[in-house]
Each structure stands twice: as C-alpha cells, then as structure tokens.
Image (cartoon, rainbow, N blue to C red):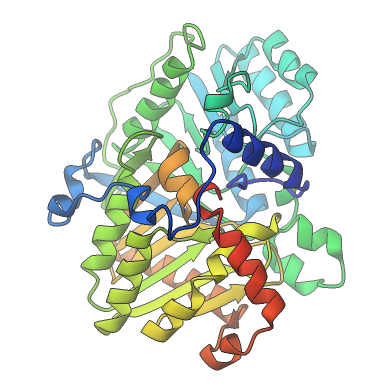
Length: 431
C-alpha cells in the first residue's frame, strides 16, 4: 500500500507496516480471480449519471477560481491570503512536515494569533508522522488550536487517512488541490526539468496543481473543515465568523465533492458520470493511477466511441508499486485507443481532469482504490469554459514534457517489467 500523497522520504516502511496490518486484520487481497474486484469497487450509482449535481454539496454560481501550478506559487498565494486574515484561518493538510515552509507557517500563524485571528490546524497522523511533536507543541503554545487526525492507535483505523488539503481564510477564500505543506515543493517542476542532472531539484520540484476560490462555494470548504474537526473530537473551535455573507465574486459554477471511508465517493461518481457523457475529450492528469474496474471501463468505452482520451501519469514515484500496478492496465487502455503519457523529469503529483469544454476538477483524489475507498478526500468541480481552457493549456504543456507510451513498444517490454506489474497488481486494492 502507498501513502497517496507524500514527501520525498521513502514510503516503503510505512507501506510494509500497513500491508502487515491488513494481513493481521484479514484485509489482504486474494488474487482477483478468487475475489472479484467488482465486489470491492467503489459503489456506482447509475441512476445518478443523469443528475451529477445530486451530491451532498450543490453546484453554486458566482465564484472565481485561480489555477495554481507547483509549490512555490501555491505556497506564496496561501501565505499572502493568510497574512491578510482578520478573523480566522483554518488549515487541513495530509502532510505538515518540519521544513523551512513549515517554520514560516508557524511564524505567520503565531503573529496572526497575536492580532486576534483564530487559527485551527488539522493534520493527518500518518502523513505527518515524521514531524517532531515539539513543532506542534510550539503551535499550541502560540495559541493555535491543533488537532491530529486519526492518531495511529487502533489497527482497524490506520488505513483511513485524511488526504484533504484545505485552507479557508475568513470564510471568504479557500484553497484545495494536491499540494501539501512540505519541503518537496521547494522548487518548481520547470526548474526540475531544466536541471535534470541535479537530483535535489528532481526531488523537490514536484509537478502539482492547486486552486484558489472565492465566492459562495467557500462555505462548502468551511463545512468540510468544521465537520472533520468535530469528527476527530478536537475540542471546541475558537468562536469566529465562519460563515460570513458571501457575495458573487465571478461567474464560475462550482461544487466541492467530499469522499469518506464507508461512503460512496462523490468524486468517483462525478468523474464516472463526466467521462460517460463526454462527447469530445477526457484529459486526465493523476499522480497515482490504479483504476478500479468501473473507472477503467469508463475510459475504455469513451475511447471506443471516439472520445479523445488522454492520460498524463507519473513515470516514477516515491514508491514503486503504484506505478507498476497502474502500468498493468496500460495494454487494455492502449488497445482501446487511450493515449498515455508518462512524466519523468520530476515527480508528478497533480490530480486534475477536464472533460469536453466546460467540466474540470482539481483536488486531492487520485484514480485509485486508496482515494475512492479508504481515504478522506476533497475535490472542487468547476463548470466554466475559461477555466477549462486554462487547464487545457496546462495539460498540453505537460504532454509536451512527457513521453508517450506506444502500443508496440509497450508490448515488447521486458519480462522483468511484466513481473513487477503482476506483483503490484495483486495488492492494488491497498495501493
């Protein structure tokens, strides 16, 4: 199993731990032929295909969205927003590692508390496992409310992680996407590509995507944060104006999709519906791609009916198994006409999709079992032609920097590569 978003530290120890945990709790996978994958797949809801807006959060208009690419630009936008806070700051993240950016965050938040701003920080126990406890103690001493999501105490809960990345400032601006508060975003992916001989830049220049939003949809971000705070029994939050009156800030229609263990994944359902109704194209960029049967079938059927289906996927990762598990599906996808590109000059961690000309998504969810079944995730869907065009331009830049996988060359890959794919696929439910 893998951690769905991580820093450059090796993930093997964590993955081995959870795999052993799964074995001890009777959750290890049998080979697919013995335990049909469909029985474990994220529950589909065909009846909702004609009404994608039937999710818990409705589509709301009057929003503005700004696409943010890579860590430096995203962190700057987040810090700028927090520096202007006058009422509250709510942060929810998978990884909050002990790094230069985390120290800058601690300094900024402490200063805002002195100005009377109420600050809440919710971090995942596993994602931030290597962060010293005294870092969080320092935040608390500064008057910041800090809570650890799902502390690793119960074996039956260790597999359910909070993979969301949400920042809400004053209830008026919100951020989400794939970017953690981590040293892995010290430089941009552009620099990583430009200095390929420098391994440091390759490791700290991850290619990732985030979004900043303003308008009525921000209330949905706030609701998710407060629900998660309550779910963890983090204690009373500091009284603040969490839900101010939100005036229109633009013309974009948006909704925030949330996914939680044990419930139907709203993101999975919405993505399947969007692909099923695609008329011209379905362009997906995902840092981890280990598709469940429904997702794979949707992509294959779309390609076969003439939709331009393209996938930009990682050519390497911080843990080998998800890459090889995903590659075990390439042959079927390629034969159906899906075009696949691997990004190899820096680690690809983005999670975005664009369908036709007006539907796009940015968030924390990958196309894999971990996101659809095990994790807490959040993704914003944007119904807007201009935003989709901007995401399209970003996608084409990524395609230009990636290597296309050709069907014949893929069929001729070595037996050793095929064996790795077979091994990884046996555990794809936990990846």
